[in-house]
Image (cartoon, rainbow, N blue to C red; front, side, top):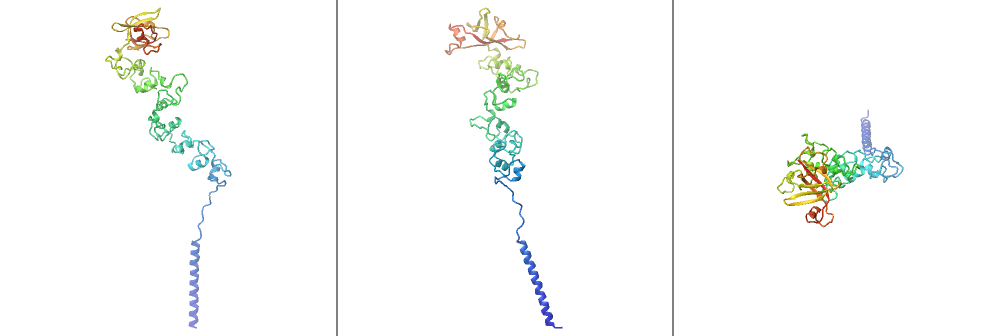
Length: 348
C-alpha cells in the first residue's frame, strides 16, 4: 500500500471535517444574531391615544378620534379616563359618591372608595367636602381662618359637621321646608333646640342624653334652681349659676314683683326696686310664659297668673320712639306707658 497516498487521503478528510465544524459554528453564530420575535403592536386605528380593544370594551368608536369627548360627563375626557384607569361610561367609577373628574382634580383615587376618608383633617369626609363644594385637600378652603367643618354656609347656626350629624343639608337653612331653621328645630322634643343641645354637649336626637330620667331641657346643669331650657329662653347661661355676675343666682334674679294688674285696661305695675315702679300695658299680643322653678306650673301661663306678689323674671318691651331707651325706662321718666312684648313669670 502506498503510504503517501494514505496520508494525503487522511489529511483531506481532516480538512473536510474542520471545514464542516467551522461552517456549523458560523451557522450557529448567524442563528444567534437573528432578531427575536416581538409582540404585535397595539392597534389604535384612529390614532387618538386609546387602543382599539379598550375603546371597544368601553363602547367607544375605535375608528373615530373621540379622545377629547367626555362621554359620561364626569369632567374627564375619554383619553384621561384611559390614563386614569376609570370608566368613560360611568361618571363615578368606584361608586363612592364623588365623580371621577372631581376626584382626579383633587388628587383622590377614582378607582378606590375613599368617600369616608378625611384627607385634610377638617372633620369633613371627602364626600362631605364634595357636597359642600370644599377642597378635600385644604382644611380651610376659603382661607378665612375657619376650618371647613366649622363653617356655617347656610347661616342656620349649625356648622357643616353638625348639619351632617343631624342629616340636614348644610347648604340649606331649612332642610325640611317647615319654616323653622335647622338650628331652631327640636327633633327629640326635649324643649331644647339643636343649637342649644350642641352648646350644652347634649345629643339633639336623644331627649334624655345622660339617661338619668330627666329630659335635657328640664336638667339644671348649674344647680341654680332653673332648668336649662328656661335659662336659655331667658338669655341666661345654663352652665353658670350667676349669668350676669351680680352676686344673685339666676334663679333668684328677677325683673320685679307684680304690685297691681288691671285686667280691663291691661295696666301692669311692677316694683323693680325699693320705691321704684314701672307700668306697662299687657295686650292680646303679649307673650306670657313661665320661668319654671317647679314642675307643678299650670300650663299655659296666662294673664290669670298676673297676681299681686307674683315674681316676674323677665319683662321685654320695645323702643318704639327709637331714642335709645327702652319703653320701660321711658315710663319711669313719664315718657309714656310701653306695651309689654314678653313677660316671663316665676313659677316656684
